[in-house]
Image (cartoon, rainbow, N blue to C red):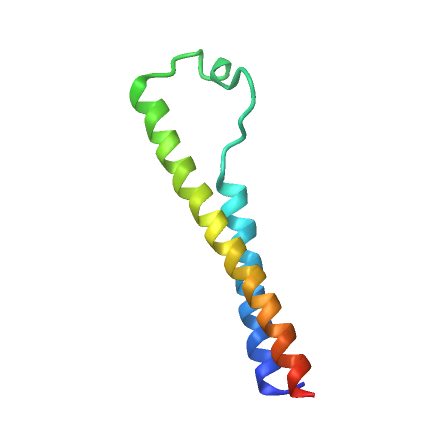
Length: 82
């Protein structure tokens, strides 16, 4: 393996771990989630979860787009290097 292959592989692994972590941090959108805590959903708790969910959703999209662009670029670079 050459140095560029190793570097691109490490970067791809970092993107993979980042995608997994960001997706696992997101909350599920299931019915009756408020039943667990007694149904006491306050305005503050609802809006804070929405902002965190929106933040995580945005970063999921950004990391996924970066991952796919990196995979395509890696394949092109390694194909042209041979």
